[in-house]
Image (cartoon, rainbow, N blue to C red; front, side, top):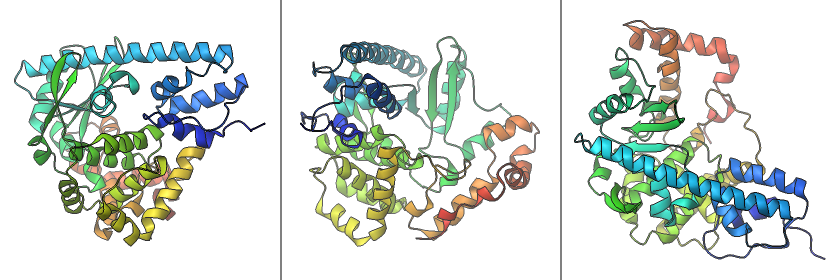
Length: 385
């Protein structure tokens, strides 16, 4: 009799949108499924997982019932998020703003072709810096709270990339982004050219603007790298976009990654996508670049092991999401550490509310970080590889 499939095999198999059979028999232990489904949820895979698992009638009855209930709940939540997105899109559009949704239900529709196949927890909108300020004001009138004070707003926008707003009545989060990552990550990824190549995606019977496939791929790769690919869904998104991205303009993507100095970051992300889906069709130039940089394979294997096994990070909590080894430019590595040390965060400003704080806190922040984190502020992995 064959042994039940291992979770390291089952997790990636559940990611696949294509009809790939689950390898091996499924476990019968209800306790195992409680443990495993919590991992599935943490990785953002529940809608994809329930879609494949509910057809297996040999699972314990309680597990099947739980899977059906989760599937209905996730679908209901996704449809609710569609309504919220269209409502906010209409509100901001009626005031002359041009928000571009990405991630969430917009990503589910454009990449998976089904808004219910991806968990959506918030609404992410790209706007210009000036539009973000206007949008924040409009949303505050609708019950949203959060973001910097008017005193700190200009300095905050120079150092950060988004306003994160929260509506207490239903706990909805809306993030208004004028850049993909904060300035301290030293990724000069320009949104302007991306906004000149927008496409449309249909959601809830309406067409809304969306990033072109090649621009979306870069954005997803940078976002996942920022969070060290901690969730398997981010790798699934990349693999699925490459699989169905018939309109991918790889030449534009190559140009973007070189101008933004993120070649290694992009290659590691694509290597992870191929680890998930071995038959992923990548251009010969991508494969050539991967082989030319040995650290790509090494980093991808380390990250994949951490994602699948769920190894907790040993890095400083301050900078656990930054992997300097993904940056091939030594100047970028130095800028990241320097800007991280002197750039005040919203939490910093909340604690020290003075008119001159945007400058003065930049001088005070290193001392505060040292007191809070001690020697953990400078990680061992910051050394060149």
